[in-house]
Image (cartoon, rainbow, N blue to C red):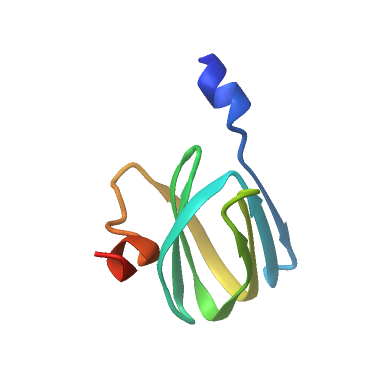
Amino acid sequence: MSDEFERESHSLKLDNRQSLEMSGIKDVGAFNEEVINAVSTQGDIIIKGSSLHVDELNLETGVLRVSGKIGALAYSDKPLGKSFLGRLFS
């Protein structure tokens, strides 16, 4: 494993499928109450569920906190598309 990946750690903590905290988040793309697309240091992540809410997004610290009913978490090797901030400023 390269030194770059060791420095850029990523973790997640899921409590009762209702509260998710992730570190190592670089960006969040599109999101709504059913899907949140995030970019982490270890790859793109798709969070699916219902009544999803982004409680905290701090790109300086890399923390993302989500609440709601979390049904699935999946990592993707395919880029998720332009981020929310990228679309906002283009």
